[in-house]
Amino acid sequence: MENVTWKPRCAWLLGLSSMAALMLFLLLSASSETRAPVRRVLSATGRELRSSSSPRIKQEINRRHRKVVIMENGLVKLTFSNPDGDIIGIQYNGINNLLEDHNKENNRGYWDIEWGEGTERNMANNYDKLQGAKFKIVKADDNLIEISFNRKWNDSSDQFPINVDKRYVMLRDYPGFYTYGILEHPKEAPAAQITVVRATFKLHGNKFHYMAISDDRQRTMPSASDRTKGKKLAYPEAVLLTNPSNSELKGEVDDKYQYSSEHKDIRVHGWISSHPTVGFWIITPSHEFLTAGPMKQELTSHVGPTSLCVFLSCHYVGRSLMVKLGNGEQWKKVFGPIPIFLNSVPSNHHNSRSILWENAKQQAQEEVAKWPYNFIHSNDFPSSNQRGSISGQMFINDRYMNESTFGAKFAYVGLAEPGEAGSWQWENKGYQFWVQADADGKFSIKNVRPGKYNLYAWVPGVVGDYVYDNTITIEPEIKIELDNLIYRPPRNGPTIWEIGIPDRTAAEFYVPDPLPNVTNRLFVNKPDHKQYGLWDRYTDLYPKKDLIYTVGVSDYKRDWFFAHVNRY
Image (cartoon, rainbow, N blue to C red; front, side, top):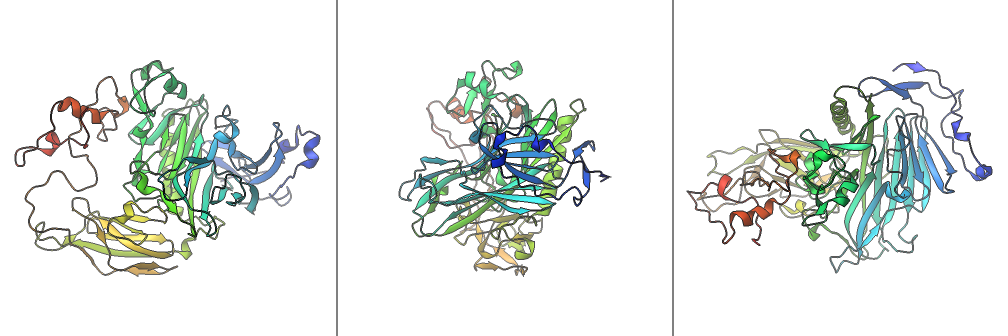
């Protein structure tokens, strides 16, 4: 990138009142004589955005007489409440605030949690925004700034029994920032249970109208007010749009659960604004800090406009995924880091949305390649040289499928907390590391945190769960090469009959068309069938008695309903 001359930025000092004497300015970048050269940063199209510089930070009192922390690098400017640590402003590419500035300051960019007292009742009736009590600069130099908003469990009157350390990182030349959280249940804290941990960003409703979840799930979305004016359906999240501001959406159903994805498929999602054309993207560079394995479904982005990173929840599973922390139990987990990536193109550029989406996907690949990040300043986040790896090859031994042992084609192989076969599906306190084997069953799991694990696996098309006999201890810089693994599926004899395919999806069964008056046109003729009310079609098809499936005659693609539901 071309070097340019640095010019002092004096705007920080403009318009300050007499309270300036009380402000603590932490100007942590170098002076004009020693500052590193400013570099030009380009957008997704190669267009120069603006001159970037070393990241800088300051504390001040804003015009609402509230303490704030401001962090910027010439590309992005972040404003945090202090010491709460909520993001109240994201300034980028000429937009003063990407977040919804009509919302209260604690309802724009924040971390939150749902929790309950004790462990006896499966109840999480408390809500906490995970706000800090103290602000700290963890690291600051010409290339990065990392800050912390933290709170001890006994700092607050509500006695939320978890220590919270909420971190934000800004890098030189990076159009965005990183965030992660460290939650700790100390030995002396009372028992608690947790159902949800997430990072939430509520974007500017007048600017962000187009949402992208995947290559085939992108569309112009209704507004929050469109939902308010709509007709509520079977549950609050599902609304029939009766009088939307965009008439093309009239008669469609909006339901945030239609935009969920399996963990293994959550890599990047977000929103695109117009005038100017800007992308806001949440990237998941690793799945190690998510719970319940690769097939667990989770929310992504939805109407608001809102983007989420849900680190832990009971969605689609239920209360068995509640994290229960007993009296005297010590627990600590790092959630993240995740990047928030911003990009832009000229508003009149052809295919601007496609360009931003492809650029976001490319950035997501780069973030995955950089994992684990080497710029995180926490002893609880091990770097690459503090991690280990494990590799091997898995085979299937099932003489009724093949007379000779054969490779476990495209098996899902993972490390998780020690337990029984399949227990990874309910594991929610530790870290999990999953890969998909190749066509011969070969796999390699890299960058694993030190600790004790069981190795689990399952193979698409093969019944059952595999667990390695011995506990595996991962140590820094140690590469474990396992002997050949043999999986013997549970069987007492040859298969007499079966319905469907053992692949942990219902895609092969009969999925009916939705009723025409409750459709989302995005999913018409799409294989994922994320339409509202499909379960109710069972009553339409079998109004008086349940389906009858005749082995040898019926076809599960046509005759076996995709879900087990009640008739009205």
